Image (cartoon, rainbow, N blue to C red):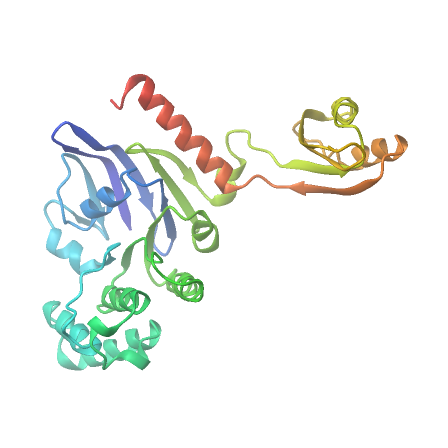
Length: 323
């Protein structure tokens, strides 16, 4: 449904994105993830035909962004991070106006306006002037506009920015419900958003794609493993030494050294591949006579992966620059 090949954009001497390539199949929700300034918005503006790339190609629903930009616009709905609205219009007037721009006939406009107003929780404000709406409601109006012509592709740039926690939950729920009916690219730097909503994630840093995969695949990559957290009353140095000798333990890190004397120390263990060390660790601590308060498995997080890959990309740029 979305195909991107070697997109590059240069502003003067600044390389905004470099050889960006990815595919999004029909009906999938893909998180476009990266730190601020990574190139997310530049990529999305190219895909929505707002700006041309310096080189590379892309197609939306089978239409080339260079040669068939009008057909591309018909096939997608776009919610930019700062959604431009006409504040003097009422909500339903604005949506009707947008429908006319898309050459929708009056019966179709009426039907679709009723649908998107209900879908985006705008029923209570449909006759209110946009300038009188909160940030959250304005975001909903922008999303309703993106859905109005029932496009097969939705591109949403930071759709939950400025929303309160309840509105964020509602928006994420709506995006999940739209998946399957629509192919969605969700641009964000909010990691829980990707885990809560997306089927796959594409990570961009320094203008380059540095990773792609499901959240589980990303967490499991780069040899990121779960760790075992152990809290017991023991001298920190002795605890570290004893746990390091347990079969299957690869690494021990003391997180809390048990000071003052007699308080609980916390250790984080990483196991060798294929080992579950929890039973042996518990048995060892009990044999030493140390009171054991907690032992639990802590899985690798998407945040750890994100920090690692973006830090590696920043280091590579600092050493040699983006080519």
